[in-house]
Length: 134
Image (cartoon, rainbow, N blue to C red; front, side, top):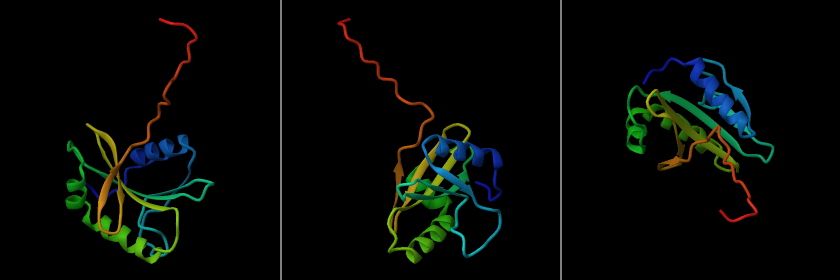
């Protein structure tokens, strides 16, 4: 895991979210306590907002245990921001882990736990309705 931001990985995450109907804002590099501790903020017109922090793992499969061990600073920052905005609905705090071998794995951060969430796909399922019998 590295603290440097990778523009290519960030762009891939942004495109994936835009494909699924989110408006994405990339937060600038650097610390600003008025901004959430995230790399991307994705919003939908329905009011759903996702604060996404991206980490890179090299040749490692990510799991809840890996996220809790390797991303403890990011978890603490997201939970602090979450506590400050506890009354607001529709806010989701996520850590997306990227590795060359496994791609993105997404985890939602809760007040006292972390859970894996289904990743977004660029492929839409194709369902064909046929009128006949095969």
